[in-house]
Image (cartoon, rainbow over all chains, first blue to last red; front, top):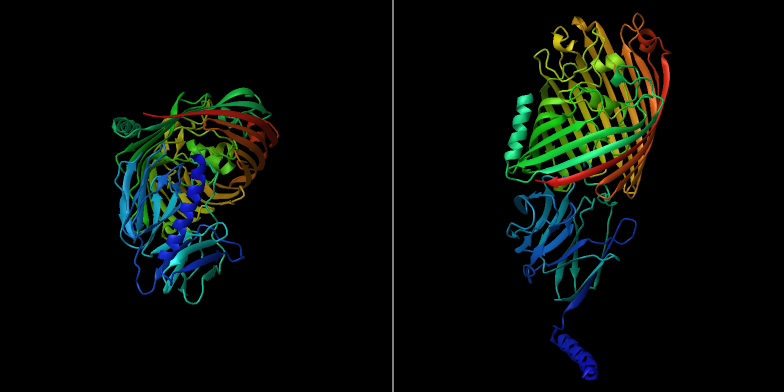
Length: 219
Length: 402
């Protein structure tokens, strides 16, 4: 039995892959976005969104996501969610936190708490929601709420790849919490014209938040 | 004031939210050639002089932070220093804080009680201690010795970093009383380098046996005139902080308080501090203080004082290496007739190591050179002195909730 498993499983996988390829629309294409710092080195962790210029397709299906608080930091530091997603804000620290946002995309407050006493918060407007803790001023986190159907974050090579992109024109935007750019990073992408886009920052990034400093010190 | 602070403690205990407490024992091993300390009414610049070597109590500190509902909290710090203070255990700070949520990029904060003005960028650890050295700079030593806000402070923050900017801005204003004797110590012994914070109901060290001199009890209201300070802070991300403060206790030197053999000293100063931290673990702190204090009507007797310090520290994991230079000066306007000024400078080198959540070890070498003419006129000693010490600190902190 184990031997037959070894032969059947790869066969099934290949058949499934073939079925997927056949089911794909003939016009679907791929998009590879590369984000480079001013010095040409890759920028990892950049948020990349691809929004159809015609408005079709719309936002990706909403998610139920988690923004945790661990060791006096928001985890993850940046969370990307589609429009109408809900985010739970557990506090895994032993100390209490007061989470707030006064960003125009979503304003809310979670009064002093530990654990997870509150229901998830829903995000119905696209934009960048900056999170803070009213007790620990050095805590800062971001939720990027996007109306784009395709989104992701750049990897260690500064790359983000999206397969199966329906043919058409897209607005591709790049954002990172340490960006120092004066203008929004946005380029149009036409799937008929190519598969690659490159963004190169015109200014150096802001310095990353300090780590390793004792939490008991004044910020 | 005493009644208000006790009420504040009771309010804290009655609240439903859990309180955080800390208890820290800091023991020292001292090797010092210091002259008789200012704490023992001498003109020595160090807390532990040549008569206080060996094992000493650095500080036994208890701290309580009690949330009171959503936006209020109470903070109380009590310490014992095992010297000849008036009370064996006493408070250094006790205040109520109001901290509402930010709205539209702005946040306000209010403190009521007894606390330090937002001035030292060096004393950033709990208990208003510096994590870089055992002994704070001459400026912070003086603030800990003579200055305390006993009153109401308001702050407004513009939270730029929460709005995509690289800067935050803070404005502070305070009205206070019970700090009229501030300046007494500068006139009597000048600057010193020590971590001995004066307690709210205590005095600076041993009882003053000379009946012609003040009792060194610094937190009294004498003239019924409130003092004030205003300040601003500019912050670049979490990397750099610039602090500015103007302080004036608006003392009326015509008013005396016989029970403490002191008067309202008219003390005002400007302070500036800059702290820069890098991602590779370096910290630089520059501090400057410039002010004057006077007594008698028409400011006939006036002491001008200034001090500067530069600190450079490098963090290696849990280890911290620090070097600091301090200079200080007091000028008395009748120095030619009756010397009462001084000048001096100090070098401090320190290593500290945080071991886990509970232990902190530190080793410090400090040398202070000072020229104090009062040593000759009052003590028949040479005016110049070079004092140095080596100090080892072992501190254990317990934390909990109730």
